[in-house]
Amino acid sequence: MGDEKGGLPGESERERWNRNFADLLQELRVAQTGVQILFAFLLTLPFSSGFPHTNAFQRVVYLVALISAAFATTHLIAPVAFHRALFRRGRKPELVRYAHRMATTGLAFMLISMVSSVLLITDYLLNRWAALSLTVFIGAWFLTYWVILPYVRRSWIDAEDVAEDREYAEDSPGEQR
Image (cartoon, rainbow, N blue to C red; front, side, top):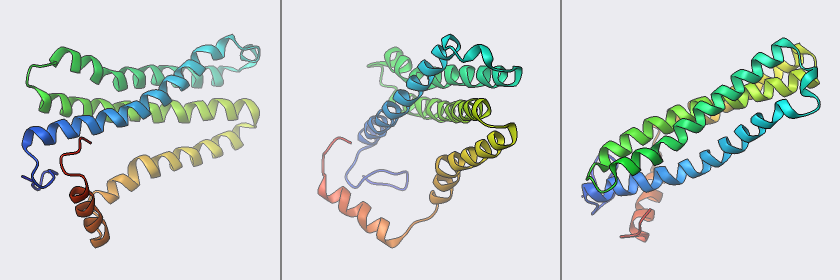
């Protein structure tokens, strides 16, 4: 029973929640890998030979990057723990809503960590003005692709997109996405 809530034609409410959860898990896999690599890099950075040469500003930026990476990691992995706690309890809608909020929060912290990491490295390599300018550009780039375009696109529907969506749904009946 496809509906205005995003269901596919012939899809039950339970199938929709299962599909939504499977889609969310796929997205989390990508984000988790990225944040884990960034977090690992940040954890090892103080032990590198150049770190003692950083100034007070760079150390503060490092702490912002490190702590926001830790928060991002927490939020992007939290849906796994929540799933374990709710496993086989018939609470998939609650799980999907919670996981969505955690993933969104995790991505926000990941953005902060990545932009802070760029600022840290560029400030170490370049003068402060160049580092700040480049970091503002990178931050705007992230915001454009992670926030602005998805938000604008939410209500922007092309006839071509609708046709592609219908074709996709018809080509894969019963397929688990």
